[in-house]
Length: 101
Image (cartoon, rainbow, N blue to C red):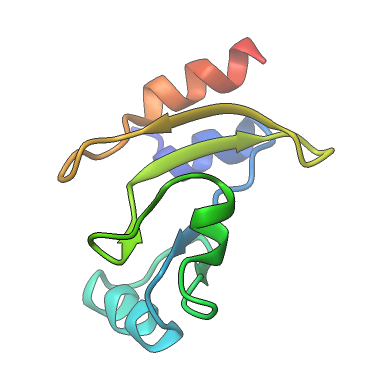
């Protein structure tokens, strides 16, 4: 079975992770998982500025809501979905959305 990341790369898509955690938290998270094959970006300071700019910062919880954005090569958001806490994005759904663009 082809890894989800390979499927995104085959669709000419770059996967990035962004969270309001520190770089040190990202390192610990990646180590706990045995490594991560895509970049994790820190939106720690100013805290949540990127999440706020994209409208997904949860000020009550001090973190971003789990969200996925498909951004084209011109920097335009073409697709967005916000997920309930504890819900993981479905790679098939994301690849279908990407294909429709």
